[in-house]
Length: 234
Image 1 (cartoon, rainbow, N blue to C red):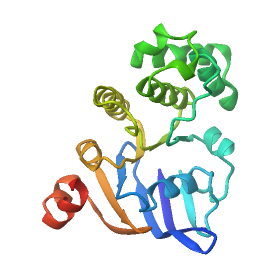
Image 2: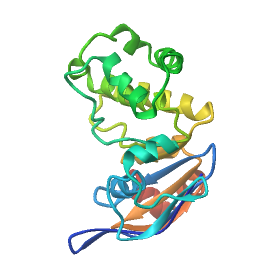
Image 3: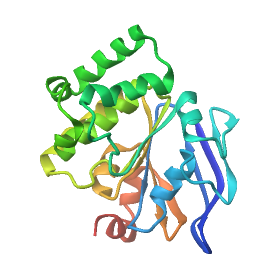
Image 4: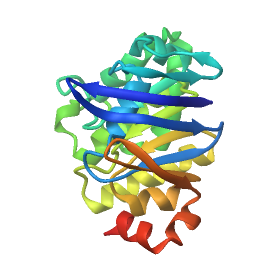
């Protein structure tokens, strides 16, 4: 589904990502974990077209999409739920979700079908469809951002720090939804600072430190390494 090869991203003279390689197989959930400043979000932003890499390639479903614009990647099926959610605060829940209709040029019938599916997954949004997004709780805004992404019909979903700033009960609700999405077959690349949450959910984890990939593997194997476990869960 996704192959990132020798990706380098710089800000000015500082290399934020240094030669990282990432492979995401169809139907899998891969987690990028590491401390603040490890380069996780920068990696996602480069994949999603928000940041142009200095070098390296991003291949999506066999096609080199390095440097593609974000809206073209969305139309191709690669969709990012950004850190901080980035919902349109003055617009209603339904109006936020209609953004997906325009980005993918959905027919009225396609939009209605996908909207109904999203409301089944996130019933609280259905109850607040006319409420402005800025008045929702942080967890509800994260659900809205997820629903908006799902309405585009992605093949690969990039999730950047979905638990950030949420109350524990809302973290549980959001991650239950992510688990359901993944169980239904969605391919996901997840960036999450809460390594315990990520390791509990993912099929494979990639550990980053100071812009570099330091190890990767299945969660149980990584957690069996005492020094790595201390790094993840300290």
